[in-house]
Image 1 (cartoon, one colour):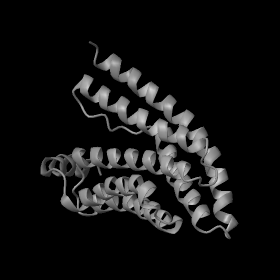
Image 2 (tube, helix red, strand yellow; image 1 turned 45 degrees about the vertical axis):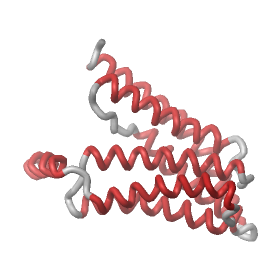
Image 3 (cartoon, one colour; image 1 turned 30 degrees about the vertical axis):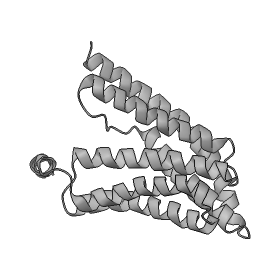
Image 4 (cartoon, one colour; image 1 turned 90 degrees about the horizontal axis):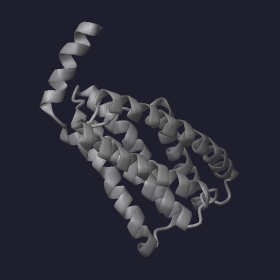
Length: 200
């Protein structure tokens, strides 16, 4: 109800970030570091698969937990956004380097998208003096399909006898590329509105 949302949201924001959802978001940053180190450590494809799957699960749980305990905050949303972008970019690049199926071209493009969005939103946030955490519909699709692509590509490498992972990776690759186009268009419209609202 309107009365509930206006009274509870500011209070939640004043309390700041809660350590439990933050730990789940931070786990994805740690997982990204492990993915980078895996190039030198030689982690098995099965280990990488479970790492990606665990990161995807943490992405769902941090937001769910924050809402459950009524501790949503701008700081938490920013950390969640940062963790997602860093982990998805790193994991897709690592999977591409490792030769995971259907990642040779798609993964670097999608990873580049995530890094550009992270950099652009950071610059716009500094320029306007307000954190940019709005997520257009196209970006939500990129987010979902990126996790599906990373999980299925890792699964195809880990379980070579299961063709379902190969098929999902192939389809999700095309869907992720299409979502990238819509996501970029959505952010361009958002930035245009912000520039009009916050002129130099």
